[in-house]
Each structure stands twice: as C-alpha cells, then as structure tokens.
Amino acid sequence: MFIDMHVHPDFYLSINEDEERLNFRHRVMNIHKNGTPPLKHIFNQMNCAGLDKLCLLPQDYTTVEGGATVTNEEIKKIVDQAPDRFIGFASVDPFDPEAVERLEMAFTDLGLLGLKLNPGKQKYYPTDGVLNPIYDLCEKYDKPIIFHSGLSWEPGTLSKYCRPVEFEELADGRPKLRICLAHFGWPWVQETAMLMVKYPNVYADTAILYFDNAKEFYTQVFTKDIPSTWIDRSLRHQVMFGSDNPRFEQIRMAEALTQLGFRESTLELIRGKNALEFLGCSL
Image (tube, rainbow, N blue to C red):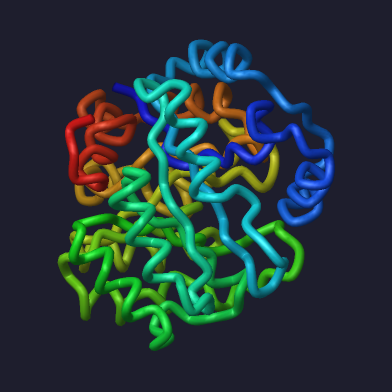
C-alpha cells in the first residue's frame, strides 16, 4: 500500500462552491495558480503516482485568520465520497475555548484519525500549556499529531516556532503520543534525525521540495544532508511519504523516492507500513 500522508484538499471541487471561501484559501495557503479538481482528476493523479490513499489535512486558523482553510466537517464530507481512498485528519485552533470539545467530536462523531497543527502560523511553541488538554485528548483516543515543522510559505508564519528541537520536550514527556514532524523539519533535517533516533514516537514525512526538482532536492536532503544509510539502517521505521500536494507534485516526488538507493524493504516502510503504525490502525 502506498499512502501520501501530507495532502491539503483545500481546492477540491466538492468543497469549493463558494467563491469567497475559495479566495480565502488562496490567500491563506499562498497558492494561486491552481484549479478546483473533481475527484475523477484526483484519482487520476493518484493512479499516475501509484498512490492508494491520501491523508487529508485541514488547518484551523480561527484566531489569526477568522476561520479554517478546510473544516473538520469538510474533511468528513470528502472522506465519505471515497472512504477507500481518503484518510481524514482534524484540526482545531488551540486558542479556541471549545477546541477540546470540537476535537473530541472530530474523533468520535466524525471518525477522523488524527490531528494537524501549525505552530508557526499561530505563533506558539509545542510546549505551550494551552496545548496540554489537546495532547491529553489525543493520548486518550490514541490519535497521532502531524505538526508543521521547518519552513512554511504561508503568509505570517514564523519558522522559529517549528524548529525540530522545539519538539523534544513534548516527545520526551509524552512517549505514548505519536508525532510527525512534517516536511522533515527542513532546513533543520539533522535535528529531525536526532529526535527520531532518540525518540521512537517521533516520525517525519518527505513533503519537502523547495529548490530544483524532486530528484535533485531529495538527493541533496536524503543522501547528503542526511546520509541515505541513516534512513536505510536506523530511521527506516519512522519516515513516511508525503507530498504537500497541491503545492508540490506527487508524481515526481513518488518517483524520486525510488532513486535514492534505499532497500526495497525500506521503500515499503516509507510508502505505507510506517503510516499504518503511525495511524495506529490497519485501514
């Protein structure tokens, strides 16, 4: 099974009937030259990349932007259209007084499988006390968290809140809480590797492509910045494929992954087996 663990469905046609909402998503995501594809187009992209499932990530920025780019209910709507192809995550604004209640509803009533948070957008560190009730709930329901880490191209984001080392206290203090540092924490990829080798509850995804093309960028990050042997020998159970689609193309990133010299057994882990462990379910 091949799973893309980092997809933003902000522009899917089925949730973009309102032009004002579409313009909001363009502005907040800082993505402008894209269409609003129907599911048929999404499935065609998946087939071309060899993907079986997509993990759909919303982002609730109520206190800084006035709303969520995609709501939990919209994620549920998309998942229900193709439950065999989509995995739905939730998002809540940590500064919303009803955040815990809304997250519990997302886990229980909507059946969403994890939480997505972006500290850089709302300018909090992962150890901020406001997050403790949210972490408690994720532990109660055994739900993982994907954190944005490293660089973000979204307007108004500060990378200092998303530096990988800032997550160490969380990883150390809550060893049963599975967390993923999205984008491999780029440019601090060695910090991400440090956390992964020390904490088995820390994962990372490959949703990074900021220069050149997918093959060149992956070669730089995963064979030079991080020697390929680090992943192939030591971190192979904690890396998950992610594309950050629609910002980056899934097809080229999925292909580039195969050209890094990893063992086939390592590729199988990255493509899907690690995602199933992270999610805590068999799908």
